[in-house]
Amino acid sequence: MQALHRRRSFLATDCVTPFVEPANIGRRAVIKACSILACLFLAAPALAQSDSPPVTPPVPEAAGGGLTLDQFIAKQSERLTAMDSDGDGRISKAEMSAAPARGGRDPSRLFDAMDVNHDGYLDKNEIRAALARRFQRMDANGDGILTPEERMAGRMGRGGGRERP
Image (cartoon, rainbow, N blue to C red):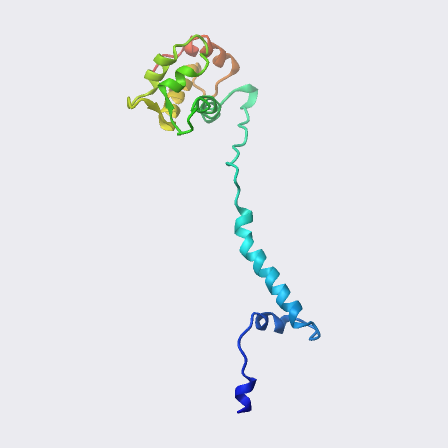
């Protein structure tokens, strides 16, 4: 009979009590410690989440102020995606036409040249492909680096002197 009275239920303190020395620490202190640890473990995933979008680090220029293909695409993509006024991840012809014109180019003609699947929108793949083609045209010596001079020639419409592929 007495053996049944000694039986007790399993408590969270049973996990911690064997590790707590000296034995004069009260049961309430152990329960508080377990509660604090449980809160920390449960809150950790929520604290690790971030509400802000990931920040893309700035792309350093190549030696001598030149740009590699990836650097050129990153820099120009940022400018083009800023035109996405409705935030759907695509650029419509209207969005491109509403943006300030650069270099006297007709935005409508530029859009038509970039929209290779003719769906009326520029997606990230179309933008990347168009920028890669532009990079190849501007890279006059074909070394894979756009120098400031090659970029200036490209802005002036001379295309860096290479034929279009």
